[in-house]
Each structure stands twice: as C-alpha cells, then as structure tokens.
Amino acid sequence: MLDKQSNKTDFFVGNKNKRLLQLFYSVQTTMILVCIQQLLVGKIHTTLILAGSFVILFGIYFLIKKNYTNLASHMLLLILTSIAMYLMWKYEGIHDSAVLVLPTVLILAVMLNLPRLFFFLYFLIILSILLNGYFNDIGWVENIVNQPTLNDAFVMTAIISVISFSVWLMLKDLQNLLTRLSQEVVLVKESKAEIDKMLHHDSLTGLPNRFLAKEFFNDVLLRARRTNGLACVIFLDLDHFKHINDSFGHQVGDEFLKHTAGKLKSILRQTDRVCRHGGDEFLIILEVVQTEKEITHIISKISEQVAKPFLFETFDIITTCSLGVAIAPNDGNDFNTLLKKADLAMYHSKHLGRNGFNFYNEALNKNLQEHMELVSDLHKALEGGQFFLCYQPKFDFLTGEINSAEALIRWNHPQKGVIGPDVFIPVAESSGLIVQIGQWVIDAACEQCKKWQEFGFYTLGVSVNVSAVQFQRDNLEIVVEKSLSNYLLPANKLELEITETVLVSDTDIVKEKMAKLRALGVKFSIDDFGTGYSNLNYLKNLEVETLKIDQSFVKNCLTDEQDRAIINAIVQMANSLQLKTVAEGVEEEEVADFLKSIRCGAGQGFYWSKPLNSDEFIAFLYAQNNSYMPKI
Ligand SMILES: Nc1nc2c(ncn2[C@@H]2O[C@@H]3COP(=O)(O)O[C@H]4[C@@H](O)[C@H](n5cnc6c(=O)[nH]c(N)nc65)O[C@@H]4COP(=O)(O)O[C@H]3[C@H]2O)c(=O)[nH]1
Image (cartoon, rainbow, N blue to C red):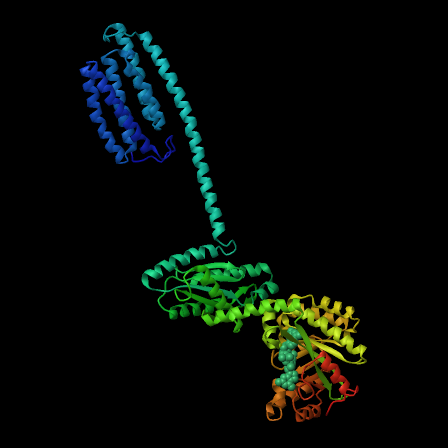
C-alpha cells in the first residue's frame, strides 16, 4: 500500500520527504535545461516530450507536499523510466544518451528503499534493452544512428546489472548500518530516560525528588498567578523516625517510609504532588488553592493519615509528623525561599512538641536568626573559654554537713554579660553543641572537686547535669573516665544528674552506658523528679542513688497541701527503696524544717546559698567554719 510517510529505516532517515523534494527540483531543472538544449539543436519532438513530462511531473510536487512520499517516489521513478525508454526506442536505441537515466533510476529506487519497484524496473529495463537489441537485429526496429545489435544490448545489460547490484549491496549495508544506529539511538534514549528518572526520583519510595518538586512548584506558581490563587510548599518530617530505625532496624524503617509515601499519595488529589526531600522528610506541592483554610484542611488530613498504625509482623508502629507551610506570593516567589521557610515552620512545629503544623511568619524568621547567632556565639564561647561553673551546696539534713555541690554552668558573653543555662542549654542541645559543652563541664567540675580535696574538703563531691543528647551522642563513659583519671579524682565523688526523659528515651543504650559508668564508681541522681515520666518501673531496673525533688513542689509546700503530700510520698517511696532524696529550691527555714521532719535526705536552695563561682564557693566553705554546719 502506498501510504503516507513510511516508518522503515531508510537511507534518508526521517528526511525522505525533504530529499524527495530536492530530487524533484533537480529532475525538473535538468528537464528544463535538456529541453532548451534540444530546442536549440532543433529536436522539436524531444523538446515537446520533455516539456510535457515537465508539466506532468508537477503533479508529483503536490503529492510530496501532501506527504504521500511513497506514492510520489513511485510516480517519479516510473515517469523517468518511461521517458528514458521512449526516447531510447524512438531515437538511438541502447546507444541513446537517455539510457543513462535508467541506472540512475535504479540507484534512486534503492536509495528510496523501494525494493519491489527496484526489481520491477530492473526487469523492465533489462527486457526493454534486450528487446531493443534483438528487434534491431531482426529488423523489426531500426534505430536511427549507429544501429545497435543484440550483442551491444547484452553488454549494456551486464553493465547495468553490475552497477545496480553493487549499488544495491552498498545501500543495503548502509541501511543495515542505519538500522543498527537507530537501534542504538533508541537504547541511548532509553538509558537517558532511566538516568533522568534516577536523577529526579528517589529510588526507595519511587517518589519525585527535590529537583522535580521545584519544577512542579514552578508550574503551580504560574497557574496560581493566572488565577490569583496560592501556591504552597508543605514540609513534612516524621516524628521520632530514628526510634523506628533503632528499634526495628533499617529494613523496617525503609518499609515504613514506603508505606508513608503510599499513604500520602492516597489521600492527596492527583494534581497534588508528594516528593521525598531525603531521610524522613517529604515535600508536598499542592495544586493552586484559594485560601489558607483549604491548606489547613489538607494538612489535617495528612496528619491524621500519617498517624494511623503501620502493622509490622505483630507490632503496630505508630508515629506522627510535624509540618511547616510556606505560601507564595506572601512568603516569597521562588521555590528555594519557600522551601527554607516551610522547613523553618516545620522546625517550629517540632519545637512546640511535634505532631502539629505551622504556617511560616516573619517572627519565626527572627527567632531563627537569633538562634543562628546564638549557635555561632556558642561556638566562639567554647573556643574562647567564656563558660564558667558556679556551685550550689547541698546540705545533708542528718549530718548537717555540705556533702556535695551541684555544678551549674554560666556563660560570660563578651557583649551580653553573664547568661544563664536556661537561655543557651536548649540551643546547645538542638545544635548538638551540648556534647562539647558537656565534656567541658565534666572536666571542669572534676578539676574543681580535686581542688576542694586539696583544700582539705575531702568528703565533698560534685554533681553535674547531663543532657539526654549527651547520652545519645557522646561516649560519656570515656569522657568521664578520662576526666577522673586526669585529676586523679575518686569516681564516687562525681554524681551525674539526669532527667527522667533520659531514662525512658532509649532504655537499652542508656542502661549500657549507665552500667559502664557505674562500673567506674560514678553515682546517678534523677533531676526534677516528679515532673516527668509517670511509669516508675525504671526505678527498680536502673541503679540510681538519689531522687532530686523538683522545686515546683518545694516552692509552695508550706501553703499547698497537695505539694506537701507529693513531697511526702516521694520521700517515703525513696526511703523504702533505699534511695536518697534531695529537695531543690529551698528558700525558707520553715521549708527546710518541714523537709527534715519528713526524713528528706538533703536540701539545696537559696536558703543556704545561691550558686557561687569557684572562689566564692571556697570562701563559703571556709565561712561554714570548716565544719559544713548548716544554719538550721
Ligand atoms: N528559684 C530558685 N531557684 C533555685 C534555688 N536553688 C537553686 N535554684 C536554681 O535551680 C536550678 C537547679 O538546677 P537544675 O534543676 O539542674 O536545672 C538546671 C539544669 O537543668 C540546667 N543546667 C545548668 N547547668 C548545666 C550544665 O552544665 N549542663 C546541662 N546539661 N544543664 C545544665 O539549667 C537549669 C537551670 O540552671 P540554673 O539557672 O543554674 O538554676 C539552678 C539553680 O540556680 C532556689 O532556692 N530558688
């Protein structure tokens, strides 16, 4: 069938129509030139034939223009063959110069990838040449000049056959080469598509990555501008995903991420996009919305869905997520700015206790700048030795002696003056700097405690606050061991104050580290006891010496009956578990009396002394008449 453009690989590789048109022009130009030449030499008949052919060939021009390439090719070659044969038979037979057109036609048939036409024309030409020779031989035809013979015809036939065959072979090879080349091109295109996919998709979840998220967002932004709508970037981070990895292994963690990706896709519209930002972070690009309320609604759906349990073997794994949203045009107009702001808003959600969402606003940005400044100043503080320790004594109610002092860090900021730990410890914890700061505190406290011993205060111990982050990230046992041996301080003089959250956060790791530290001889106390975890089971599993009763109960215990009852209960429980108790925040004599009356072990607070720097503290010790006698 002579259909429109063939898909077969041929010599012209997709250019066939263009090339055919060029061939057509060259044939027509030749026709005109030969026509003029024939007219000049007075061959009117040939001139008329060629002129007629010239006109007929214009029909082919329209076929080419209409993309009927195959039909046009057939027509062109058949018309050229007919003209050449007519002139051959009419004038000089196989000696006529028109015969030269015949091998040209065959070459073109091969080039245009028309095998059937090639064979048809080949046999037609051969037959015609042989008949011309034969008819001239037997006198049926008499060509005018230099009358050909059958002998001449055979020679001509052989030459045309060899030429045609060679060209045929050559072009077949060329075609094979082109076919192979086009297959290679397909393979290269497929590999390119695969590489593109890898570059733009996350291999674990199959979700588009950050680069594609940017493209999606840019498209949404264009549509939002046209419709006066909002384009937003939602940043989602799973809460406590690390716990899933640590408790169930990375394989389950991966499964969980895939599951979450599926969940997110299932609740969003097809026009919304879920992308993976990395780790446990996802980006969601919503199709244009008109109001913030719509975004809030979608986010609530997302939070609800993420919080649904994931069944792994017999366990239900449950986690929540924190989200942040930044919206164009209010918060910016380019993807990277909005991504940063959405991330910041998400970070704020984490800060507020996780499992929530926040829209970005300028106040968050200001907070972040202050935060960054503080982090950078903290780095300088560590390098520049701007930290120092204060010590607050703890009085033993039974012996009336100062048996220990709590080391409390202070920061002597070059511009802002002395800053308390409540301001910078949370920042140090979130930036991880607490690890280095904590190491410095342990070292400085051990050094100071050794000095007290050298001053003759042999029984005085020191306690140091240790944050949960230090337990998770630091080789605490190595740090402690090094400091103790550096200053030749007996390990039982050092106490580590930890909060209940440390004990319940990662029990196995904590247990292991505590066991190592206890093996060294270090003691433990639980700080702010009574404010944290309600399950007291850990008290029997973990070997702690002391419970420090939180000052929030102590502060109002004279007036608040419930606070008194709580303190009483803690002391009774501690006594029956053979744990020591220290009441924090004692400011009045009556409170100290009450604590002593209920057999609380020790007290700490402004009643005896505020935290004092090292010199003041030594002076304080001497002022206590070297006997550590309290005022009570
Ligand atoms: N109103 C009142 N307050 C009293 C009284 N007696 C003591 N305090 C204050 O109560 C806090 C006791 O320390 P904390 O509960 O361990 O609470 C500490 C501790 O959690 C943390 N911190 C202090 N130093 C360090 C440290 O070196 N490392 C770590 N990780 N945290 C530290 O910062 C918190 C605050 O420390 P500070 O500001 O020094 O505040 C101290 C102390 O000055 C009192 O009678 N009345």
